[in-house]
Image 1 (cartoon, one colour):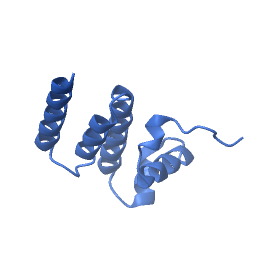
Image 2: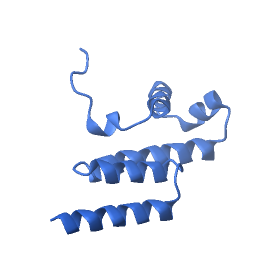
Image 3: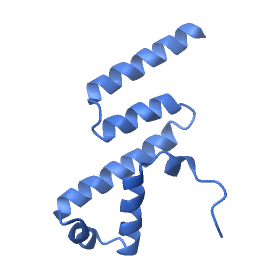
Length: 100
């Protein structure tokens, strides 16, 4: 049965995140096995899983605010600095408040 509607938390993930989830599931949740598949250490895979969990939580927490969700995902993915993300979110909220 194909998925008719992809959940919001999943649609916000990058392709490499989905590949990681697939490998994780096929490895029955064994981080040690996934680490072997990627030829990296267990702590590296654990950090990747923790970041993925953060991305999913961010998506759920900011469901009504896609801009803020995007900024937070970029910060979690280390594409922008956390301080820059905070500044962008604060400015966005300030501008929205002024519009109200």
